[in-house]
Image (cartoon, rainbow, N blue to C red; front, side, top):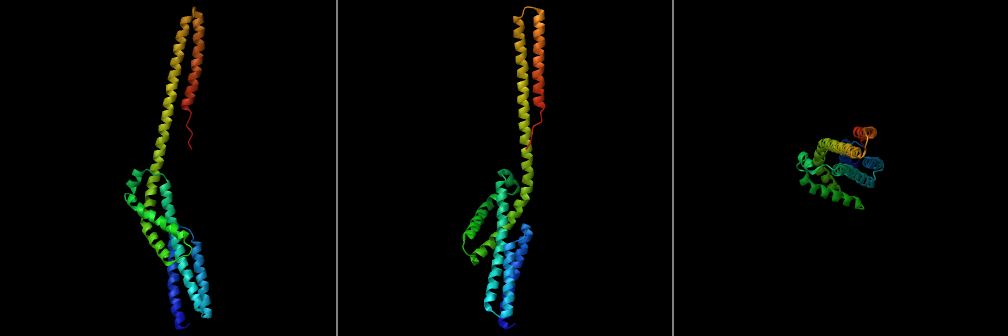
Length: 238
């Protein structure tokens, strides 16, 4: 290897190592494999081998481009993961006062989050990857890192709170239904008693009143039994 190739090799090797560190960071954060970035490093390795075999300077340039692309793709994946965490948090429907309780700085960070979201959309619309876009993705991922970490911690507590509030609402609705059933039960019994009393006044003999009372008692008992079963029926939950 001549001195020129040695210089090219050292430069590309530094970029290769930088991209490799970014890929490892992506894997630790997202718990997934950044396949596009890994493929770019694989292409870079092929060009490095070709350059070493043929002393073709164009191969070094191609290897350098792939290393740069791998670095970009690794941070692009990190940024995409961070924005998904933020989107899931915003779509969870947590109460605003509870969010501010567990993450007081969140309202102040919204402007930064919106700027990064716009940056990411512009990057996806760009036809070619360039150095400003690469640096922008890198800086955006770094700025979002502490925000995403706090959101993840806050989400754990907010999820518990959301579950407790849902259970309270369900219990409140169940109690309201029970109260309505009890009121209907009392109104039915009262109406039956009033009807029985009014009808008794129209009957002349004791036996007529007795038979009518027995019939009414059976009807009231049947109604009460149905209402009691309705009141005691468990509420289905989804």
